[in-house]
Amino acid sequence: MTTISPETEQTLRQLFRRFNRFMLLMWRLGLGRFINFWPEGVGRIMVIEHIGRKTGQVRQTPVNYAEVDGDIYCTAGFGAVSHWYRNLLAQPQVEIWLPDGRFHAHATDITNEPNTLPILRQVLINSGFAATAVGVHPKTMSDAELAAVTQSYRLMRFTRQQPAPGGPDLLWVWPALLGLLLGIVWFKRIYAEEDDS
Image 1 (cartoon, rainbow, N blue to C red):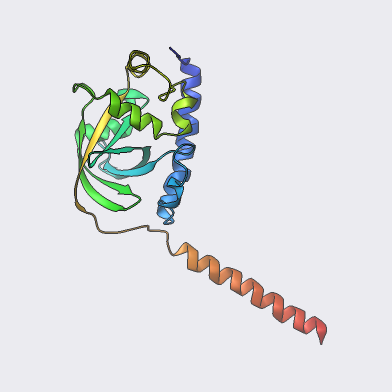
Image 2 (image 1 turned 135 degrees about the horizontal axis):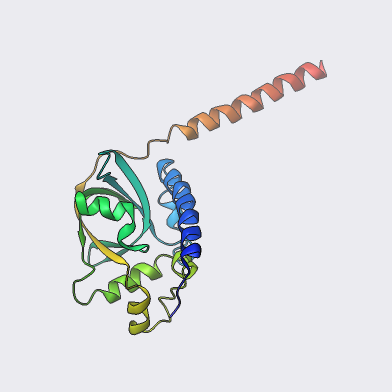
């Protein structure tokens, strides 16, 4: 069984936090479908939009996920201390952003339900490099080894409800970039013509 030191765990949490900011930006730019292109490497990534239990503010958290029999599952790999996990316990009505659209959903902690280890294993397989970065090898570990190393993990189930309105809020960036590039090309052409005359 692989364990990591508290110092390593803290470093990994900081790295994942930075990676999550990048993933969230990709979703906001409308690239959510494309960042799921390599599940074995990057993982299958969705975004949970939830309400902060203390602030009441809307939060977005990218997580790895698996779809099993129509429901969506993810795990809090750092356990019950994860802020997004505690937010979901306080307010389980959330919105999830999936490659095929946004949905209202109800989140339920199923960690202690029977026979969840195969679902947890699939979520970890779908996490790409993230699981192996913390010493979990879901494809090769026995059930006993996986259960031992993920003892503190929390497993969440999301039951999809109706589609949610809205979409990527930073799509305007693409036409702005295109306009900027066309402007640069146009100015270069104007200056080139002036130099030739």
